[in-house]
Image (cartoon, rainbow, N blue to C red; front, side):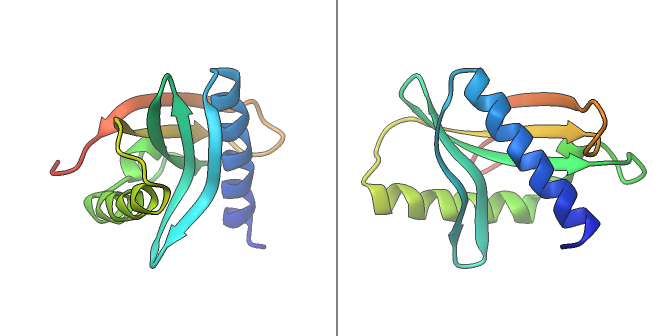
Length: 121
């Protein structure tokens, strides 16, 4: 496993714990549909939440949350639609970003952006 993959896995583990502490119910991790992957799928107050986790150990390429581009959003929307179809979900949904700056062994900076983006944006 590369250092980048290790850092990403660490960030996702941290994100799951963070969301659970906030009271969100974790439903799935790394849910895949074709070429798309949703990092975390959870539920909060009856809302189905799709969370993209971005972990960075340096800021030379920008803040972690700035790394969710148009192409990634389209892939997440596609996977979210497939998940809802597969599970028969027809309620309210939300797309969030959880940004983690740091690396294992250091105290991370976590920022959680609810309703960070939406289809058609």
